[in-house]
Image (tube, rainbow, N blue to C red; front, side):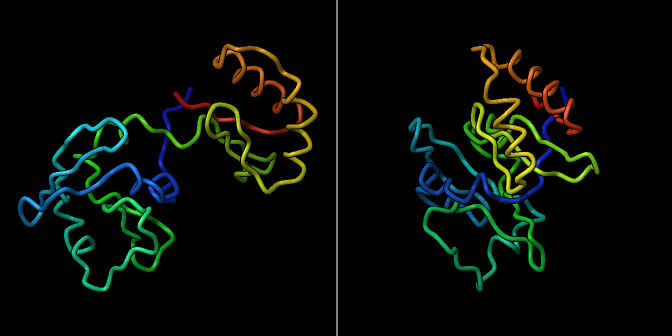
Length: 163
């Protein structure tokens, strides 16, 4: 299995404001925070290279649900975790998808999120999934992923599975 690689889409952190709260500012770069899910307290440290981005006076979050440390990289579609090195354990173990699916031409056409949920706008993949993957039955997730990889490969798709 491949190691998961973040594409910096920011989707994982768009609602993390519901789970991570800043309790107080300890210094210019350090914040006392709490993970609302577990009640765990941690110190978040803004990384030096992201300090300007974090302190941008023009920044206004589009939603209170956003992680308070998430910032959009100006002029791009990328999002930056300004505390990546000091992020809490709940963020460290999170992987936004367990598989990425590529069309025969190599273009990305879908992901598997959560335990077994397909996310795609590609109708051909959706049809293939409904016919070849939905009927697969096993409670073993590793075995299921292998079966999905085989089933989709038979239809020309390439699947990257993540640890």
